[in-house]
Length: 158
Image (cartoon, rainbow, N blue to C red; front, side, top):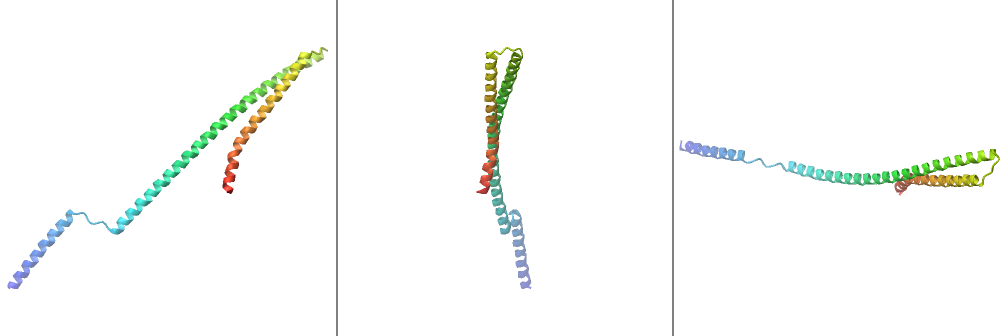
């Protein structure tokens, strides 16, 4: 029987050690799984790469927005210049029409006045200058609109 008592005491001691080990294991967090750690690291790497992509896309979008703003400002300036030249053309054509009317009336009366002829010629010259300036402004506006398109097409071919 002494063997049974000895075995019983050994079993009791082992059970006490197991209970202490279980209590100690409850206090410590479980060790993470190596596969889980690797998956977490992979996700962190993917997250960092996505952040870099978002930053690059935002930078590119900001640069394109700045370029578009510059184009809008340039186009607005050209449109304003074109509008000014068109107003000048309208005014010159109005003066030309008035001078031609005065000249026609003078010719109907049989009075050929040289200053009316000079006025009509000056008005016609001003109308031609205004028309030319208007054409130049319009051409500049068209070229400004087409230049980016041509550059984009050239870049796509390259």
